[in-house]
Length: 365
Picture 1 (cartoon, rainbow, N blue to C red):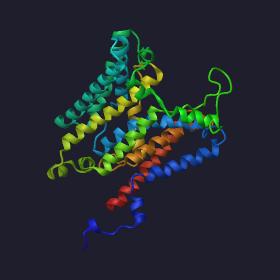
Picture 2: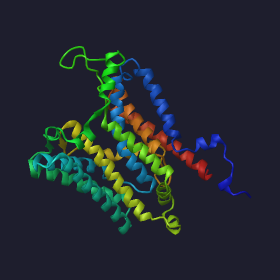
Picture 3: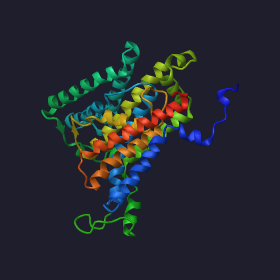
Picture 4: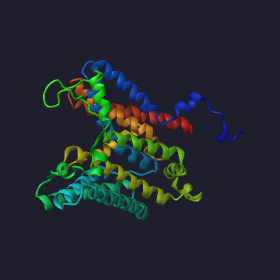
């Protein structure tokens, strides 16, 4: 009998067992569908692409962290609450306490990543499922966010961040726009539409690429490189596939899982910071249900709920599907509640595809 590790596998079979397969099929179907029903609505104009591109980027940022954590065999249901918590921390420190925005942002990252490490530590040391531990922190962080907001400002929305962030270099890193000159030139030569009246007359309707999108692309590239090109990526797969077997061969499973909880918190804080810089305010209810949206993106992208299998590229495609469907229904003039129906159908399709791929890999019937 030949060793299965050196068994020849056809190119078609290799393609069929890729975790991204379902997400690739779903992405193609979604784009074809909306091109047919909303192709003339402006959805694929520069402004339309920016709309669904920004929404997809928001999902992608938190999906990268959720993907790596799920591949490592764990969940984090506190992501949404952490988004609201991080935003309020930035606003309180900068607006209420008068600290520089750059210092407030750094403090938010330190606090949130420490909470992520605490999540991981509790999961490892207590043996409780991460679902339970992070569900508890979902409520703890949301309660703390509301309490801190009311305690310091007597309201749940804290404004004034945009004024405090003027001229701050770190604030621009999360709320700025790049390639403004290029987009102005594209507007001047007629490639992109420009405003025809008002104070912005002559300026392009899309003035550049938001840093939110840059962060999303950067995190996707980093996550894919980490997972597929490094030894640590192999440790992530091993930790989620069979933690005990991984320990036997020297994989530091506990450290891997704690670091993945911290990375998930990092991604949530990136999302929160970009959101605060965009709106110029923080709100205690920000991030509501984002934890489930991140998990949906990852599942659509091909990750197994059991851990040990998945793809950051697939998660990014899942985020793209999420964003396109959400904005595409708006452009098509459909009832907004149909978004959840459409998304549910895509999720079922993705799970069926993932189950089929798992059976092909394991030989189950």
